[in-house]
Image 1 (cartoon, rainbow, N blue to C red):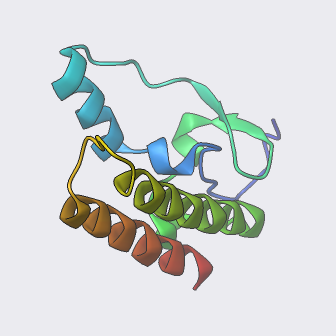
Image 2: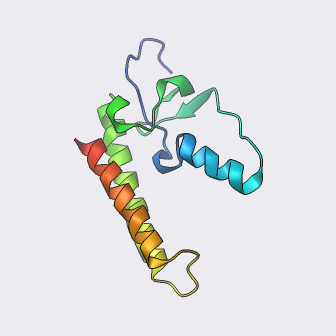
Image 3: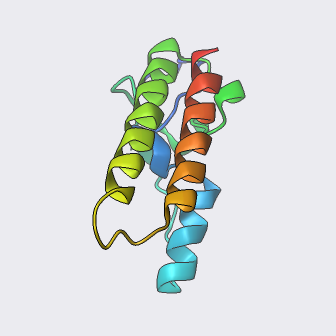
Length: 111
């Protein structure tokens, strides 16, 4: 971890980062997970959690932006693939909405 790194990064698990994902955990389990003090980023660095953001407009590290772009596209494809399986836990409309959100987010990271 570099103390002089001025960049804002994205967590390595970009799709699982941020308040929305934490809210899913809270509503599912009834537990509030602690935010970690340091995290591994999309570019492979260990940085303070405070130096990361799930918002594309805030991320200034280019390798992290590219990583988040790929991760969101991968997530969209995975959701669509899972929605076609028998017994999928979500409807086709829900899967399409999730994939659309992930692709829009990926586009914001690439811009």
